[in-house]
Image (cartoon, rainbow, N blue to C red; front, side, top):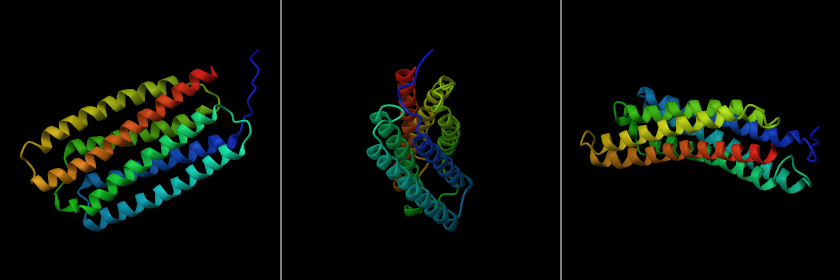
Length: 210
């Protein structure tokens, strides 16, 4: 029989769950950018993302405070800190992408490139996967399919990003809009990569605790 020497501190897992749910909300808000939204709608999406990002900052700070005030954590405190930080990185990148679409006035474009919509759809799938996986972190069970699927989706996101670059530099768009959309695409790609970093950290934690 295996004896657990670490306590089961539910608060840490709850913070991870809250952060993951915020990512689902953020990805859902970003989806509104793919339907030819008006300037007013894009402003609302940007403001909504800022609100979720602020809420997620509160969750992250509460997690850090909990780490600093807990003598024995359910797993390595460095891994807890890293996982919380990476979840926050995803939210920051998504918020930045939505904010740039608004600030750059990209509503003047009839529709964002299909490949950018594909990036956003990938983010939605990654957010849902992550939110489904976080509750399983407490028992360290059935997590392998999660990080395998995240890796597959990250590869899909890479392909969409590369094809988007090809399209942006094909001459289809005004050069100034190309620069603006590339910045947005870079943030979306950063969010997709950050989801994979989250999954890699979960894999590391599971390996240590097995």
